[in-house]
Length: 269
Image: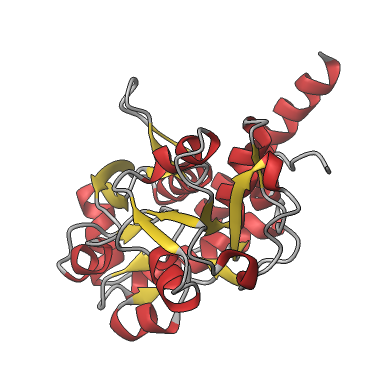
């Protein structure tokens, strides 16, 4: 109980420091940032299907996850409230370019292709493609060659980078497209598919919470990258404010606190 109380105190103290720093630093002014402040609302695009980054709880109708808490910190820093705008992986870029939200924050990998069309923030969390499989198959899948076989059933959600990676690197595997991303880990656990190409965070999350699942390549992902916020062109002032906010969160250890609160490393097998 003493340890829990100490953690809560540290969490609150750090959060108060974030607000203090935001108040004391002069954020850049301009069209997009000024519009958000004048509106009193920041519109955050979220797919709501990506545990543990951004997940829309179907019962409470509330968003949870690392990116949700990060978005709440940012909104507090700006002195505005959040309104979430639903989007999807197939429509994410189109919705961004259409200006349906001020920024999307839901476990989005920074890529050159995305940066050519829109704006992306600095990275705030390491990312990489890895696999999720059944615990019984922990030693079975240790490379792309092990998965790139017709008998291996590979299940992905449509429209995202995971599907693109699967089609590009695993053409021989039997690809099954399932429309609801958060259902795929359970389907793999039940034996409806064998492998899911996903991100390190998602694999780590599900394998730590379901003993039927394993993530044997957490330390050796196929790719490495960073997660960032996605914004429409013309949002440079908001982008600058967000990057400065990230720098403050990192300096006071808030990003580490969020990660420790969300992620649980699976037990070694």
